[in-house]
Length: 187
Length: 252
Image 1 (cartoon, chains in turn red, purple):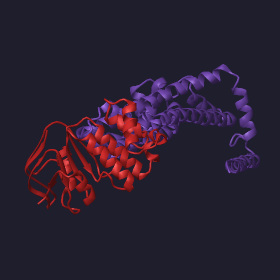
Image 2 (spheres, chains in turn cyan, red):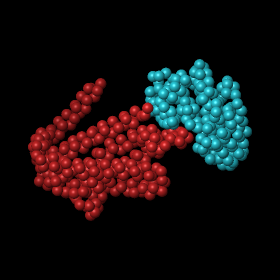
Image 3 (cartoon, chains in turn green, cyan):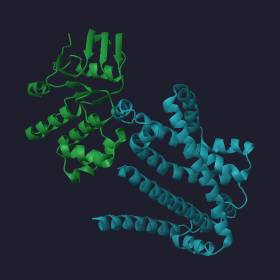
Image 4 (cartoon, helix red, strand yellow):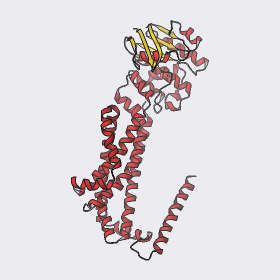
């Protein structure tokens, strides 16, 4: 399973964000680039939320993502938010995942709007990792987590995504090192 | 705190009732302004009669039919307008026209099309429709784009996205339009009855009271309209809020 970008270019108005990008995503891929270099645009192109102005994006199967924002339904519980996107899972499977990410039992049934930033981040992470898909994009997935929780979350994500391709977008060198894999460059 | 607020409200109402009483006492021609006491006496006389309840039922049935029809049509048209631009372009001038045309013009025109007995249905419908349509369309357009993108990426079926994303976000707009619409339906519906004079309606009773200078009756029927309209508004809003709480409760 992979995603391939052939000569992809994208611009907003007169501003070119991506120019003639050639890329193959298989296994684990880490993208580290300064702000404004088109990381989010690349993710949006892969997810089909944008169409390229030139070139082609070819993907095998479904791609899901943890967005830069948590994008949770505020009135739904932590479990409800994951269940909404992962109808194939039983409640106890979702709860096990949330527990693995360090969320306490009392937080599982809290409406998402009552969760702290770090808790909401982990719910969004669980949703992206548990959703049925062949490729996963994680955009700053561990932002706002304390060191212990971050380590725990990284271990869990690595274990869960072994047989799928992953594009990890991060500013953190430690995270990039921990995940290893191919380094993605945006020219 | 709550008691203090209520006490202030009650005091304000009492003040204006006193002003009304004082005004009625100052005017020697009794038919010009009925006193609060006379209004209350007339109302007490009307309440035990079957004719009174028949009139209330007659008007309420028609006005509420127009109101609920407008809710249904407003929601369907707003949804269609949000998804299909040609529908939005087509509907927009129609809604602007309905909002701009005076209700009296509609009533007189509608008298040519429908029987006076059903006039209140049509007029209530026409007055509430643009209110609901505009509010619901606004709610749909203001729905969080980021959540909609999330739904697209995770391929959430429309039926689930409707309950989890669309309804909770559009609901407050819908409830607000219902609050405004209920009062509007009663005001316009009764105005239609006063002009169309359908037999057995509240509007007809109001007109007859004015014709025979029965000011006490005129005031009593006006109080009935205010009370019945308020009662329906309170009841309906309670139901909507309970439904809203269920939506807020979410799933799982």
